[in-house]
Length: 96
Image (cartoon, rainbow, N blue to C red; front, side):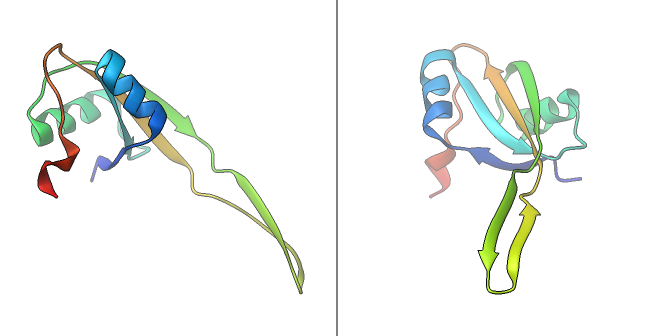
């Protein structure tokens, strides 16, 4: 099971990173906090002090077409916010 899908790089998460040393990832909805912590520690070689998770339901979306109104739902996902030990960082841009 691939636990980590991708890192979240938004303005809000960037502020969390700068102020509180926290990073956000989109993770598999079936993964628990222990699995998320282990996956990030092995992939990035850092020490994690705390893991917070959030589940998001996909937004309802609708649009009007010639055939009438079409409605659907965006994909649901799970987000994990991890707190690193002081002095440690994750560099997402090192592989570019």
